[in-house]
Image (cartoon, chains in turn orange, green):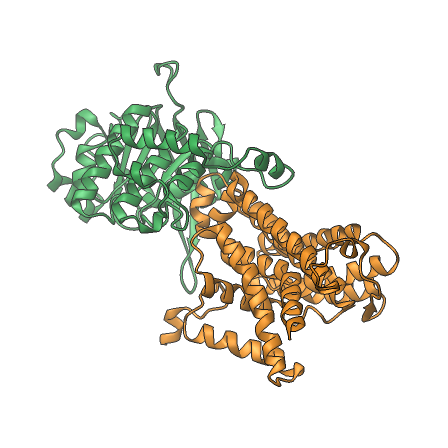
Length: 296
Length: 287
């Protein structure tokens, strides 16, 4: 039974980058970004290709982040330069990314047989490989939270938060909305691609379809984290989102333990989110119906 | 302009400005055609006119939130018409009509002030973001001390609420903060777009007193749009009236003394009455 919990903990932390990226776009930038479905698989595919060909894991993770950033930048540019609707810009990029990821991988699935040496070098806390992964992923997640918290507290982060909060005011205070949105979306997709790479490395394979439903997964993690911890500051919100990722994977582990078929998982996740949206507990830009339209 | 003191802020010059917009369904409304207006350095210009006369549009064209189809806008020789709105913000402070629009409700009072303080050197997003990051955490203790002193000097109770989200402030407090933000960094031009329209009389009096004080203190060139005839007759150095994108009245402070609210109200109603004196005020020309 304990292996179930530690497994859920590890998986949750592997997905933390997805939750943090979703939080950055939806809550900080106020931008509903569907690119995450594509950038998650792109990150996983990139890492799998490089690791399977003998590249060092840090290099593979770094390139996955870079490719994720590029994917986000494309969405940002499509939206800000070409004036394409935010949701549609993300769909366009994600659709294109499927082919790019498939070309990159060469086939739809790449297995990774060996655990990275960096993970094996970590203390196992008496839990074996799961413990080593727990230590490694915990360090990675804490590093991400600290880095994002720091950046969000600088003038750079303040400008991004202002853009999401009140773009008119942000522009009136000299902030370049086009560039800010593009950089913010790129950074968020870099995190998502890192999550894809970590998940692929952890589960031992990458699949070209692994990104389907990532936005919904990320949203679920954000909602659970916010509902449980009710954060009042940005660093706490980031921590809450990471905790939400762990709780979300734990709930999935419990549901599977109780007999839920794995094929029904995405349906169950979608229904859970639908209930949250329908009862107005969750306000998501571009995804929640506005009050006026509901009443018509 | 040559008589202006050496250190006075630049003046505003709008020349041959044209702007129009499509009408619902079909058709086109050309609001401004060859509109010209100049505002000497340090002048506090009040703009009045009926709804649809082009007052707020003029401010938006100067700020760059609307793009003109022809003409030139200069601020002290700088060609604003070639710049985008966020680039113009380097020299322009704005207070919007809606208290909700001029501030970031999700950020604290200190964070809003920090954004405004950096208006003339905003964070760079591309390669410069690392430089920004190494600039450290802001607003920090030093920033807070500075803001507390500033708000204290102005006699504003916000000094004790620096770490509260702006969304928790009243409309009057938000508009006061918005005004302080607009004047931070000594902008060359201050644009006030009916900034007391949404306030109760007490808050309006507070904000207008602060407006007068800050404009005088900074000596900045200011354009204030208002629907309040009382404000139009009591504040500023010069009053102009717009109608259908044209200048139909222009009074300097001395001429304004002789204006009666009833006469102005009549002009609002008819909006076709020729001004008693359109040449007395310095540097203006009706379109």
